[in-house]
Length: 111
Length: 115
Image (cartoon, rainbow over all chains, first blue to last red; front, side):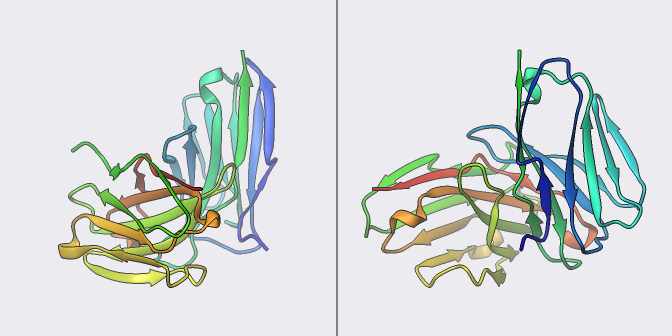
């Protein structure tokens, strides 16, 4: 079983629509990170959430860390074709170790 | 600093050949990581270094894979006797001390195709 379950696995929407993707686990984490990866490139860090219930906004992207620090969501408002990519959540399983990634949500925004 | 550099970007090799990839991290970063990624999947951990010390190696990594980071600067990942199942994107990343949960800076990866 995967440590981090991301859903949906694939999402195809029209420009201007809103969407939410999820990252869930049965484990508690001290922090969680979201990355976006474009085809042929490495992932790029979007945000780190640390506190349970924390909400962070990055332009049209809103990230939330669950109260129990077991899950997180990413909401995109008025999606644009430039938002297309693989969205990955990742955690440090133990402090000072290395990141474990989820399988990702592949988002396609059609013009 | 130009970020994390990986070389080559693409490599096509015949089954059974050896290949070596190079990663140049951000100079201030003491941690360096190698991940492997297949199409549409998340990155899978291979190994990581703190300075020149290799701190962890994935149990999934066969003895055909070896990584080095001499002098704590650049790193190389070698795959011996390549197999078709080794075809993937090999990603390198670097970070500051992970005890503070810093994010990673990834390179653009090396796409390996074994034919």
